[in-house]
Every structure is written in C-alpha cells, then in structure tokens.
Length: 115
Length: 111
Image (cartoon, rainbow over all chains, first blue to last red; front, top):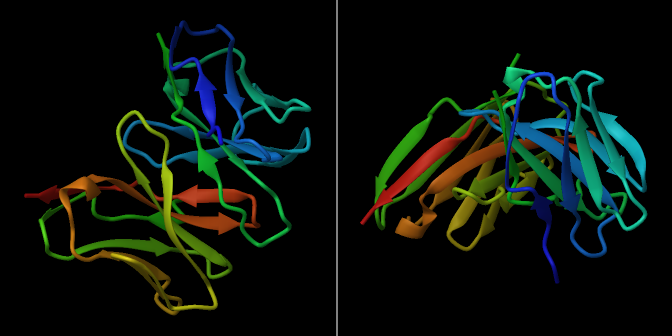
C-alpha cells in the first residue's frame, strides 16, 4: 500500500510568483486536506476536497486554491506569493465513511520558501 | 485566537520514566481529540485518539486522558523510550473534516 506522497520536497520562489504543489493520496482514499505549518506552529487547515469538490475551508484568502482529480490526486495553488507564505505545506488523505472522524494520513510535506 | 493550546514548548524526560504532555482547548463542542507525532522531514503520524464520550483511552505505552469539564487533554507515555523523541501535536476534529492543531511540544527522552 502506497502512502501519501508530495512533490516537490523543497521549493524557492520570489514574492508575487505563483506556485503549484502536488499530492498523491493513499490508495483507496477519497478525501484530501491541505495544511500550512509555519515555523514553530502547528499545522493550520487550508481546505479539504471530497470527490473533487471543496468540502470545507479554513481562514485563508482566495489566492489559495485547490483541485482534486478523478484519481484523487490533488494540487494546491498559491498566487501572488507573499513572504508569510513561507511554510511547510502538508497534504493529508482519508477515506470518508461518514463517521464523526475519519483518520487522516499525512505526507512528508513541501517546504516552500518565498524570498 | 488559539482554540487548542499546548503551553509547554518542550519537555525532557529520562528513559524509562513517564512523559506527560498537556493540551487545553476552548470549544466544548469539539467531539474528537487526537495526538500526532512528528519526526523531522516526515509528516505527522497518528498516535492515539479519544472521543468526547470517553475519559480515557489506552494503546500500549500510550494513554490519553480527557477532562471535559476542564477542557483539558493529556498524553501519558510509560515507559518513555529514546525513540519517542519527537514533536507531539494535540489536535481536535471540528465538524469531522478539519483538524485544529496546537503548536506542538518537543519531547526529548534521554538515555
């Protein structure tokens, strides 16, 4: 069973640029969530996708957008990068069985640095 | 406004002794509580959880306690081992699809 993978591992961008981060869900999972972890903080929920539709969003501006594909892989896009966007971006996949909580499995993350 | 707080940034424990990590939350409507462990260069991995209808859950060396009246969650690790050294995150599940994390506690287990 393949776990959650993310690419790239590291990325350096300059302010104002756009970036796309990718995530491949664990086999059989239909839900993907994205989190931002700034230095010294815990992960913060960005949004979640269930069967290709956005299913919940955290307190992030519209320049953070996402996609989930039919094979349940996912992308996180960030436009007009700001210095504060520098963080570790984590993807987590889960199988939504309608329970009150569905365990989320995290990938290793993409470290984004904005200069 | 932080909904989940881990007030101890770090904890150092001798191998074989008990490690106690603490977490406080603000919203009494949270219904599912979790602990995640994170090693450098890896994503968080699920450790143990508890639902709001329970006050204790055990899994081997790990026990989670929930005190709903105090809105307090704790993780006990007995006995602590050097391989337990990692960052531990407390998290709560909000509406079943969003995890709200604390800032984490760095645990160092000395041999």
